[in-house]
Image (cartoon, rainbow, N blue to C red):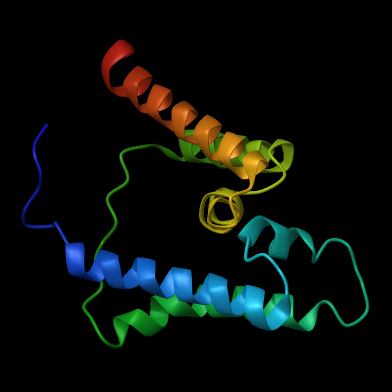
Length: 143
């Protein structure tokens, strides 16, 4: 294994992590809610008066972030080494795992672990192990 030093970005990665941590802390302090994307998005499916606007604004902010970034930095073409059927199946499996795990990586891995939630520790360990096993299987066992 080797590091691609041309694309190694520790400072921007650190800045992104700090921004995520700040957003999580502020959301918990100001709203009293956990900043989990699947929970915020899933809340749109359960209509409750006064609960839709902030969720839509949050999702709009997520969708607007990438186009806004292009104003400050050159766009980077993503490299995806998979075909459309694989991506669709992977997306469905992630969605299924999110429902069964009662949360996603942002909810459990960032927010839950910072609150020392045993359930989040278990969920994070399981989805990390599943990711490691999947990469090993696809890149080594099935290749």
